[in-house]
Amino acid sequence: MVAWTAVLFVILQIGVLLTRGSIHWRTRVMRWWSRAMARCLGVHTTITGPPPSGGFVLVSNHISYLDVPVIAQSLDVVFVAMAELDRVPVMRAIVAASGTIFIDRRSRRDTLRVSEAMENVLRAGRGVAFFPEATSSDGHDVLPFKSALLEGAARSGRPVHFAVIRYKQEGVAWWGDINVKELLLGLLRMPRIDATIEFCGTVSASDRKELAQKLWSEVRSRVIG
Image (cartoon, rainbow, N blue to C red):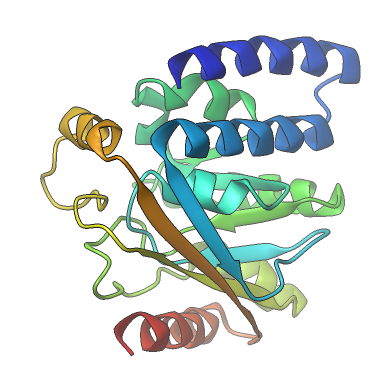
């Protein structure tokens, strides 16, 4: 996994220089890295429903660091992630270099910057994905969705795609006070990890809080149902 990350990081940097930082190149390498990481960790992903394409906004429930490669291995997408992820070993290099938009959730002002960065990605014809719970859970329920990053979609009337992620095995979830290093070591010890991502459709609303509530209801009904 570390070797693949190092190799793809070098390829990415060369490509960034040759393409002048093209978001298309960045998302393509992110997809390659996600597939390689899934193979290294023994992640077998079942995809149901039609994945979105072009410029789209996608949200899903959040269970584990594995959620990122589970989504990205089938989509050309840029993630919005908490700033703390930039300090996670192994993932840091490729995730940051692939165009990930980092947000400081403690700063309301930073939301405006991130929203504009999201619009730039959408105008380039690529997708944006984020986890509106703003944290991760144990996978058995879904925490309320934060609405701040849905402002642009609500204002423009853009439909928001939603997906549901599930894992068959226990010990995959990262939540509460679970240590990141211990989690990663536990994942490496697992002979196989079975993941499912279900692309469910879209939701629209002109008010961001209403949009967040609708999306949360749709995702939660599938997780607990």
